[in-house]
Image (cartoon, one colour):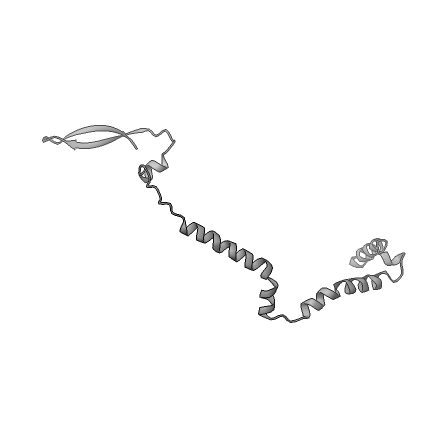
Length: 123
């Protein structure tokens, strides 16, 4: 059964084969690919030293490094003292900032008799 399926698929794909109408197509295609890739393959076969690679990068590497050094020097040497924050917030205040929080009672023990006084605060 697999032979019948393979034969059917082969017959359908044979209609798409360019060599059916153009004899020698695949040989010419192979020669074209190899000839087109030859310069790049030759360049990759050539051995390059580390200094040759670094020298090939000098047009982009040196100006980029100089710009990075100048930018770092500008950032480090600018004369600006940081301003301290106006108010310090606790973690709970930062988490609840902008959220309507319910008023939660806070219990305190006050007075000589130890009575409990409820003080409402927003947390």
